[in-house]
Length: 243
Ligand SMILES: Nc1ncnc2c1ncn2[C@@H]1O[C@H](COP(=O)(O)OP(=O)(O)OP(=O)(O)O)[C@@H](O)[C@H]1O
Image (cartoon, rainbow, N blue to C red):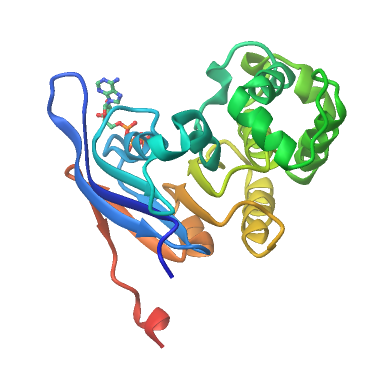
């Protein structure tokens, strides 16, 4: 089976021109949960943002064998969806954010394909966001609170719910999605997120998951890539995997 995502020779430089990521090459297959590890500042977020075409890079990112330009970059970003570490930096409320995203032309086309009716922020599709939010433990009142007034954990769970409820993401790029959550909520979010991969009706087919927690990595990961010294290296399968 050909990979759902291919990253080939990806290099990203910022500031002084020194590469933060240099020549990263790896593939992601359907069903994979690729855990991205590395010390703080090693370039994990930068790598994910490049994969989502949110940062400038050289090299190649292919989704189902085609570059972002084949789909149109806005559509590509809805298929290879980056969920940021700090949604608190967004303006207004989650409901406003959903309303804006649903009005993008690339999303409108996909809404139509998904059978969503049009309407304002309280249109029929908002029910879907509320329903998916409840599965991530999001209290309905949070949709109308400013992002800046949500706790770190609330903001992350709302953003995860939005990413899933859009129904367009096939590869989820999760940037420390549970770093602000208590252990119990962390396990609930992990379980719900992994269960999506097992449901054929769910759009999500693979995940890249940044975590600093070795325990979490072991719980969720099927493959492991370490970012260090600007390089991204996949760990060989363990003996257990080889059995
Ligand atoms: N816009 C920028 N200009 C210059 N340097 C930047 C910029 N954004 C990030 N960097 C630097 O790039 C390096 C990698 O940052 P990045 O956020 O990708 O690391 P990370 O591995 O995700 O870190 P953490 O685990 O702390 O979230 C850091 O040294 C950071 O300071």
